[in-house]
Amino acid sequence: KQEVTQIPAALSVPEGENLVLNCSFTDSAIYNLQWFRQDPGKGLTSLLLIQSSQREQTSGRLNASLDKSSGRSTLYIAASQPGDSATYLCAVRPRSNYQLIWGAGTKLIIKP
Amino acid sequence: NAGVTQTPKFQVLKTGQSMTLQCAQDMNHNSMYWYRQDPGMGLRLIYYSASEGTTDKGEVPNGYNVSRLNKREFSLRLESAAPSQTSVYFCASGVWGWAYEQYFGPGTRLTVT
Image 1 (cartoon, helix red, strand yellow):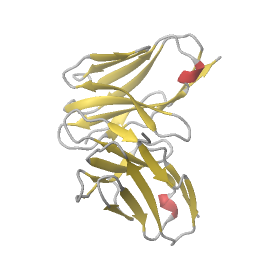
Image 2 (cartoon, helix red, strand yellow):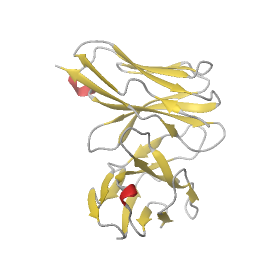
Image 3 (cartoon, chains in turn brown, red):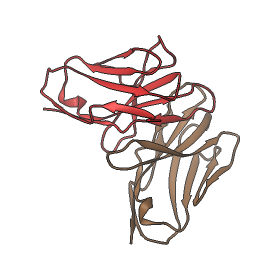
Image 4 (cartoon, one colour):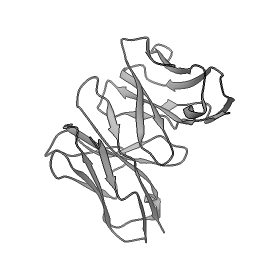
């Protein structure tokens, strides 16, 4: 059974730092992996989607990598800003079915 | 373009009461989903509808029913609410396919006392 883990559960860093969020999954047979952002009282917003054949995707200050063989993905945020404060979730789509399997998220706080 | 909308935003129920959560999307997506999110856990799929006229159980369907009213609307019903159903409920829509993304509504925070 696919399981997705995100460590740490919470992270607080000063503004301007580069940071990495981690996501690990137990079964490498995936179609894709997505990173989402969740703001309090709002829905989830898709940030990046990496297909199983890809190694990384970039959008602005965000870069997501995927290493299927080791079951890991990272979300790199460059030059963090207070507006980046949110909960970041990763989700994988297994090859075996339609469902997204979700991590519990990392709550990120960027201190001004 | 409103995306995915959900009503209500907040609801408090007493044990045994029933209610329906409404969801609508205006992106012409064929698939729609209902999730619940509990503290310290990832989202869990309750039910999904791959296309208009079809619905299927997800990971945690017990205690819930759904209706895909048309392509735009997908409702979630709690027939007899229990405290264990206290959660935040998210509706999502997407295009069914190998590289699909899902688009989420703002959520409904439900408390059952």
